[in-house]
Each structure stands twice: as C-alpha cells, then as structure tokens.
Image (cartoon, rainbow, N blue to C red; front, side, top):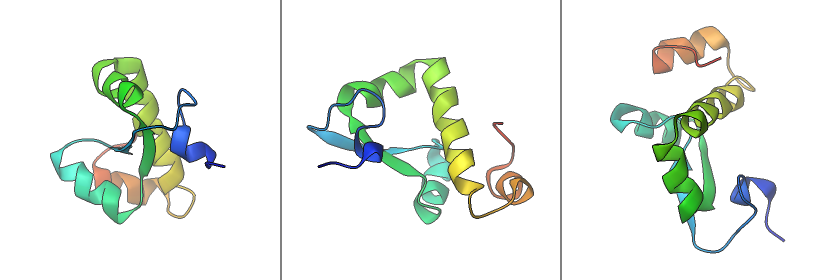
Length: 84
C-alpha cells in the first residue's frame, strides 16, 4: 500500500516523479534540505508547473510542512517570503 503523499493529487501511483514543493533553482536545494518534496505522477507534476493555482497549492503545502517544525519567520528567512 502506498502512502498518501506518494499519490497526492490524482491517486495514481505508477511512474512517480519527485516534486519540490517550493520550486525554483535556488529553492530546489532548500526543498531537499528541509524534505519539502512529494512523489506524484508525471501528468500531475506537469500540471503543477503549468497551472498557477496548482503551483500556489504546492508552495502553500511546502510552507505548511516546513512550519510543522519551524516558525513562519524562519520560513521567510530561508525562502524569502511567505506563501500563506
């Protein structure tokens, strides 16, 4: 049985790709460091990067995960802004 985070958006769990919840060149390494990643199917991964509302969802989800262990002020210090 797959964990929910592995098929977060559509429910499919074949051909999963790693998605950095806070995207961008500089933020990719930070997302790795703070484990702000999910595994999703290729179609959902493409949709996140092509649809503003899904990209916003991704950033908010990443910040919420970060704030489980750290403060909002620390998120802003690390990522430069709040998405919430």
